[in-house]
Length: 431
Image 1 (tube, rainbow, N blue to C red):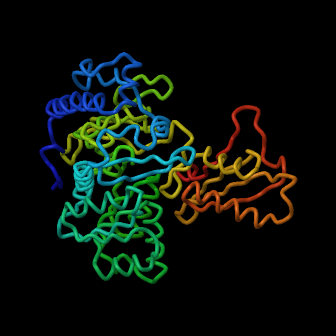
Image 2 (image 1 turned 180 degrees about the vertical axis):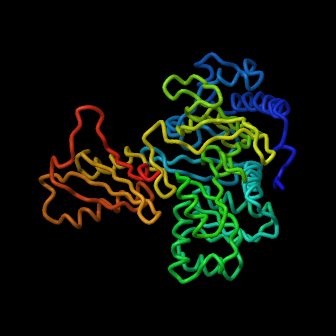
Image 3 (image 1 turned 60 degrees about the vertical axis):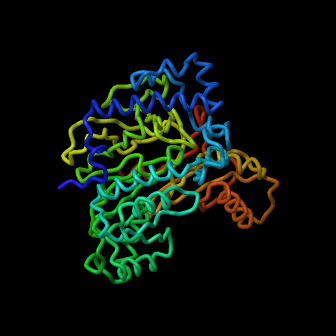
């Protein structure tokens, strides 16, 4: 028996969904053109007027938005509502430390939480469930999004945030948590800690997990399912488009259904910007057709994936996206946090180091590790350990996560004649 939060939308016919998207897109383009000068200028530059858009078939005429645009327009340049009508911001790190700030009206939050409710119900959640949310709260969208979705469904919600794992397990056992929401690496760590504490899956009542915010493999899914005795579901989202709940997995687990009544997906060639047909790998682009405060049109996610309209056994007709297969830029996702090499370079230059560095990312015991090797300057003095510690602190301030910093001899990092190899991501070797 399939579980739906909003069956009318989730199982809507293709024709009706296209009609709904066409209507919403036409209205949204006019709204953005009238209220967002930054995007109006982009449209004028491209020679496009709102009346040129009569539906989704005209989407390709609109200009793209990128992370660089969000940085240039920071903080209020893409805002479509007066601040007095906005009730919240959420935020994620940008490429050079300038953060991406997304604004929400109350209606935006309601619609976002509705999308998260769909994900929870698709994972088998009802008002009888106890939903333990261990995503970070605060500026990060994970905690607030799933927290709101859980409330909508009527679950008893445990707003735990991450960390203090033994306490997480105590609450999980005492309150009979049935659904766990967190990053996959933290779910794996909870599973390990549970067994280290001498418990087995018989000692907990978990049945499902909703995991996202970082890349994870099928092998990792099976390992988590075994250690916690659950079915593990994927969820996807971006702060720029609202947060988690842009798409979600159903019980078939062959991709994530996109909430097409709110977000129109396209796949483009990352080099040319040309729209590609369903089934081809390319960069995912989203257009928000219901957002009020921060409505992004044709936002380039930089995630590479495939779209599929293949019939799904769950009965949903919403298009599916595959797990992201990589990035068309140099962003790394480490412990759910966006990290750009350019951020690391910014800190090194500020602190007087050479920009000769190497970033090494790995996954040890299901937790991401970040090691940064930096060539030392000859005039840096003797106290290497203190300098490493100071640099690690500056990196944590910029990145939001703790790296290990290693100062190494001059010229010990291999030079390249072509594009410098700055990043070694060993996690990919574990797929």
